[in-house]
Amino acid sequence: MNAQTPDKSRATFEEMRRILRELPGPDQEAVTAVVHRESQLTKPAGALGRLEQIAEWLAGWQGRARPQVERPRIAVFAGTHGVAARGVSAYPPEVTQQMVQNFLSGGAAINQLAQAIDADLRIYELDLAHPTADFTRGPAMSEARAANAMAYGMMAAEPGIDLLCLGEMGIANTTTAATLCAALFGGRGIDWAGPGTGVQGEALQRKIAVIDEALVRHKDLIGTHDPLDLLAAVGGEEFAAIAGAVLAARMGRIPVLLDGFACTTAAAVLWAIDRRALAHCLVAHRSAEPGHTRLLETIGQRPLLDFGMRLGEASAAALAVPLLKAAAACHNGMATFAEAGVSSKSS
Image (spheres, helix red, strand yellow):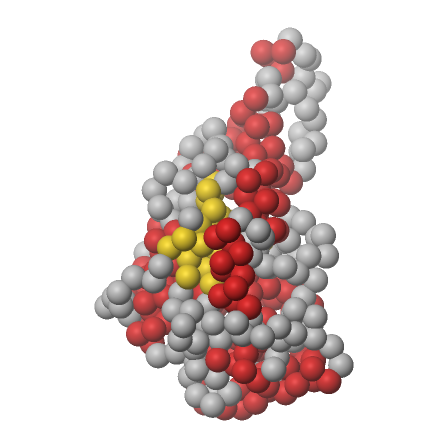
């Protein structure tokens, strides 16, 4: 399903900061109930490893002792980047809109994955006809445009869904992700840049130079280190929308699966403001994009999968959904020692 950009709202960064100050925590009663039940299931303690941790995580953020993943939603946000004109991608800028049409006609990888896991797929187009500005020459977005994109992203976290998988589409967005990471967490282009859509050699060196040029251009703002201002300066509309979706999911107690480098970068803007902001999120995979590993280490996230993927479009987030379903199924469906008539561990 497609979703078009709504009329401009009055969203502001101050409103987003206010929401961040009111973040709810997990439901500790639900977590305690899961831990208690885990101790009685027909298996040695801890034998299901990370599946047990996932069950606790799901329960805490869904607010129920019997977690489930029956209504997952996949939200793919598409945005266009002015910096794409600098030749930082192996593909031309028009591919963003062409791929959106491919999503809508069912021809992309994410369409097949969504169907395979029976997930609700939504494609959210930002203002594709009007790319963000080239951030080597000035801010990519005004505060109003960035805040409006965040508000738009919040629409993805609708009541009734029990898991939100986030991803993106946008030619040049690995350049944007690398620039935003360097602005938020330090370093230069060479520290964060990777092949993205497949650039190498001279093209990769050009990408690195563009990132460094942007960092010099915005050095005064980087010195103030306001993450939302940096999002507007060197980010993109789909990045802002993902940050908004993450924020709304937290307020709605919806657990979130983040996709790859660009998606995790968008969420990391919130982490840079409040280290607790991503507690309701798991990162689905370790992207083959080298900057993703550095970012995961920075924000303390351990990915669920490592398949050498770098496609984006929420593909790995969708691929990780069965792991969450399996965690919930084991927790809810296994018999206890008493129910199965199996002797428990000797004290």
